[in-house]
Image 1 (tube, rainbow, N blue to C red):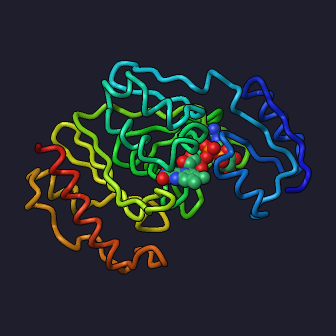
Image 2: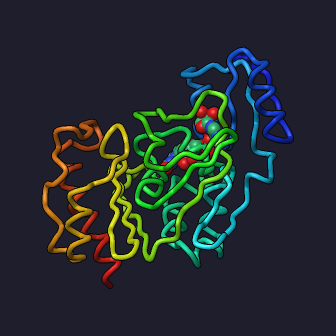
Length: 265
Ligand SMILES: Cc1cc2nc3c(=O)[nH]c(=O)nc-3n(C[C@H](O)[C@H](O)[C@H](O)COP(=O)(O)OP(=O)(O)OC[C@H]3O[C@@H](n4cnc5c(N)ncnc54)[C@H](O)[C@@H]3O)c2cc1C
């Protein structure tokens, strides 16, 4: 590693002021991606602005029909939260399937979505659920958040403060994990709001997306047999050492069936 300045601001204002004053700053959450990238010299910030001591960004609150999770909440806290278990229990399972115990102890929901890794699990929840990303500057509709591989619509100095999910009648997340990292080779999020299904796909492409053909079929008839096969063509899917594009297209069908089967059991 090389030298850099390290700051621990007490609040958002202090953090943004530090950001503006620094040369090439980066916000730090649990460091699970950022520190590893620095060690590999893929990124070289002049200043690390550590958000992890801001306890106000670690809350989990149920407010009316919404579940609100602070951006600095770790995957581990989410997987163990009684409030999340009683409202959107599928999010506890999603968190519990991320990486290993040490990654879950440090990695955060905000850091995960800000990083926008195409194989990350949280983007599937952001798209399958009706969600809003709250920042120090605005509220962003979950569907508008991801722009591309490792790319979101966040401004450089913008800080995610909270993620809000409208509580559905059902949500589940199923993934085919990479056996080493546990990142999703393909992951499917499925939610139901007033009998309307929402289906999201992560891991399969550069950017997470909603599978609209599957959504309309399931909204008409919520049965495994109604899932259209090969509806997501392999043409735009990732083709890499982990899986071919054709295999990923097939996994989308298989995992969506698993998600529907979980609902109907
Ligand atoms: C071995 C390993 C296995 C993993 N397996 C999985 C897996 O199976 N599934 C999965 O989904 N993920 C996996 N991850 C990623 C992990 O889930 C972390 O959540 C992710 O790396 C982000 O880490 P972090 O929260 O510590 O953020 P950091 O690494 O601290 O930051 C990541 C990026 O987000 C920015 N950032 C952080 N917080 C904010 C904020 N509040 N506002 C704005 N920008 C912010 C930072 O500036 C940085 O650019 C794995 C990671 C490792 C190391």
